[in-house]
Length: 394
Image (cartoon, rainbow, N blue to C red):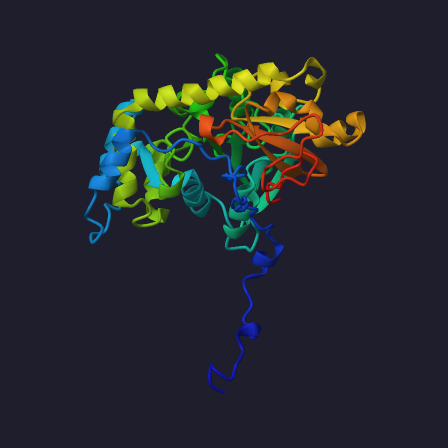
């Protein structure tokens, strides 16, 4: 029988694929006549890269050449920026690509058929269970505390002889709380030294809490710590996919073997290097977003203090979240009026976390502020269902 006579329906993926959750990417904006629609659902920086980066991108012409597989220019620039050896840096296609390289190297299925364990808080970054499963490892999900924080004691207690890696997301996506330096260091002491502890700091530049953990400081002190960072958020380079890990040579020597060749394009490398060279401009933009976050948080009515997560976390990161279930219970399914503080401010997006629904409000530029109408006014956002509940795509 020829291939044309044999339908592809008989081809099956690896069994693990059927068991994995599907990554719920944010929906694109829906065109609405007479209005400008914006995508609200992917935690993107609403601002483009700084002008110097845009100019460097426009000047790039060598797309007929393969990029440097080691991203040498970027690693050298990061080495100067972070004051670490360039040999300790491994680049990847975003911090997600760097995470996949870590999992490929240190966690998976062993020769005896048993899977390694990877521990992480849940909920956290939605890609974690997918990445862990595809690596052949087993996810061990530890529920967050009632205020959306990592339960570090429970995570330490969950370590077994099969545990190979632990993922710490700070600030946690999507709930927002940071990990402090003191609690993180106590946790590292509580787990075996042969377990890789990954500190995922995608939103590190938005943190303002003085007691927040600094992943680089932990990497300097503990040989089993790996730091993940990205240029997607603060630098506004999400579409170019450039991130990196920082770890000791004992780990990077193996990571380089598993690293995806040519993962970071020359245009992404040039953009990232240029952004580091003009980091003061990046900081200014980040601070404008932090100021906007604080303005909106301060503008929320006092009665929301119990349901706005950011108000009760020691360090709100990028998100302000409102528990819609409580709004509906308390206000008779009429959150529009109560969302009046957002009229001049934030972009609103709905997402589900477990069985609870939240409004997600993230920082936007002045041209990207979406009304959440009050006083009976119908919300004009393309994804709104008429009650101020906007579809995040989950």
